[in-house]
Length: 625
Image 1 (spheres, one colour):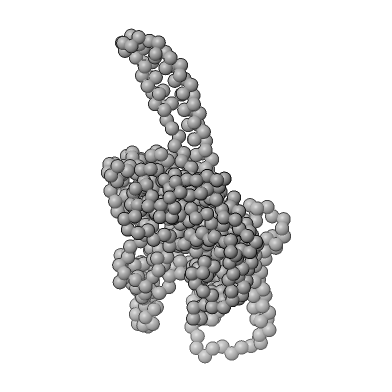
Image 2 (image 1 turned 90 degrees about the horizontal axis):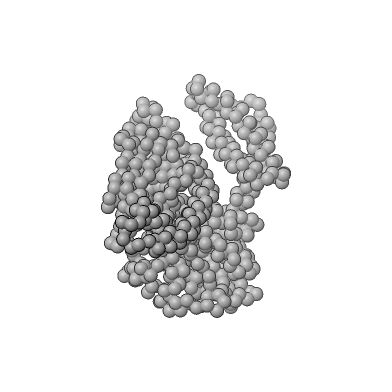
């Protein structure tokens, strides 16, 4: 069943053509991703599909009566609106009942709460409410009376994401859904979209997301649209085949064209004396042979300043705001060539830590010593504040007219821009006119121009296209200096880092040897062991309790349905505990290959989540029993 039809749409701004003659469709149940370079109009296309912009030509048609929800890159809210109103703006009766129920809970008004419960019963909205609760809990949205103006950019982004998920649309359109989410949220969202019965079209730079969620890839390349019926790995394989086939076709056409050109030159000039069919075929052949496979390559190459023996030393540093501890006695001595990832939930203090390293903030205790030869390159999360009206080439020339590179080479500002995929036609464009990804790429250029030997990257992957990310990864792998990275891009971190600093909260920073996936597998095994220990302690305590206990003076009786649920929960919990113990043993055995290890890690996390849910329900019912 077709949900969306796009027919011959085009869009240009002045002389700049974003895309032309694009046509594609989307069927029910498809999970598609759109891949293209920064500046080729991905966000513009998404806005057109969402009805926020119009194409210059062509049309977009949706199937009648389907519900479409759109998550833009930059959500817009009324600053004075309440979080609850922004979340539950749908007029669907069940959504309105849930909104009234949530507000009644916060108000502590018994009469109001009873009316809300009656309404929920009447509409059978409880299952829907549980699903919404899960979404809000995972995205850490709790205070419905809070006004939008008090939220950070990341909180607004999560609010917008929760809003479109709650709507349960037939078709979900997402523009960079993983931006501003921490790693736990990203993994939850990935699973939610992967297993959900929904139709999806999204733009994302998260390659694990593309690999695990999507079954259909749409690529805009050199103005043409290509479709690949598979996930990200399949796309990479088939894209390479397509480019090889095109190169082969062009090469054959050029060889044949030489022979045909000789024939054309030997014949009399009068057109009527030649074979018209052969002449027409020659011009078709000429068109094929004249094709150019435009494959611009981003070139990152810097003349890294020499790095001495003493680099960066942290001695028992302490930092906190009021009662909120960010770092509590952390020490570390950096070694040349180290590439360290920093992970932890949003708001735990990762950016503050980087600012202390950069001497932009001072620790409350301890010392930070930086070597004399260290040249920092700091790619901040908020990006560069370009002055209004500033042109692209002026941004580069403000730093240097000529840039020294490796092996004694020197490039002018214009040449450096071209290496970073800014053609001459863009050099005098006002920076404000660039796409989000192009601004990020320009910002990266300004960092690398200074030839740093210690790179500090705070969310470098946001808004960058997959091509730029791949080239950046290749560059960082060969970079001889130190790299300190905060990122929510799991693929990026897995490929680069030697070990990770894990911000566990309460000022605790754990140094884990390995990449992100290795840490997650280890953490899952540790969590399983801890829960098994707690369960054993709980069983021991229950066995030690006196047989006869006085019943509470007043209690609410369980319904028949609740009694049956209570009886079944004990058996379900026992089975899950057994499976958890078996999985823990497997993970610690060291005999599993990578694929089996990953599957076991994913399953143990599912088991842990189920145990949390069922144990909480068991406790609720046991209090009533």
